Length: 247
Image (cartoon, rainbow, N blue to C red; front, side, top):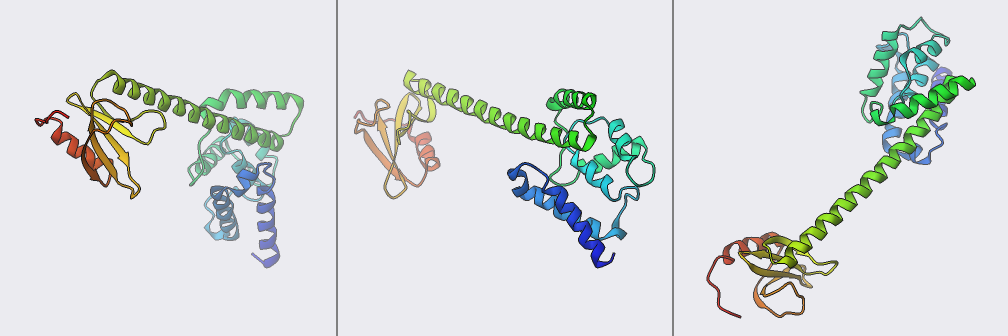
């Protein structure tokens, strides 16, 4: 491949890449890795395994990764581009190869109906396939972000419910693992009906006290100072079942 052709190949791939309307996508390290891989592959034609995929065909199909588009629709459009006739198997297996590349993915099943509905609407209006692929890519990106935010919110609610349940268990007098009350720095646990409090120190250690109730104001009986909660937990497991003096 002569210098001019190599420049043209790189220019075409970069031009396709920067068409993305998402700055987040353009700056994503995984996306940069994919386009770099594409450039290397195109500059080394001897390493090509897929002989029917040259020029615009490969770039178009790869842009559809992650979108729900029937193979028949892709095949019909791709066969209007320069190159040998593609079969359904050609297109399906080339798409699968793209989907199995690092940082790529299969279409999200939860987005299938939405993608196909958009596809049908745009086809009925006469939109050409490359534009539809761009629209579907934007739709998938928005929906994936929405799913991510919803998962994060659900996880936050679950953690809050678990925190509240742990607090109630502590306050009810039941044995429990180390638990915080609100945002207080102290942690409490109860073993064998005995309550213990851990308080962080200025030297990043923990003071362990035996107390009557989960209260930061109670002086309690000092048990020791430990590097971490794990060390304190081991001590509690030992002393919780020993005879102790009244305090």
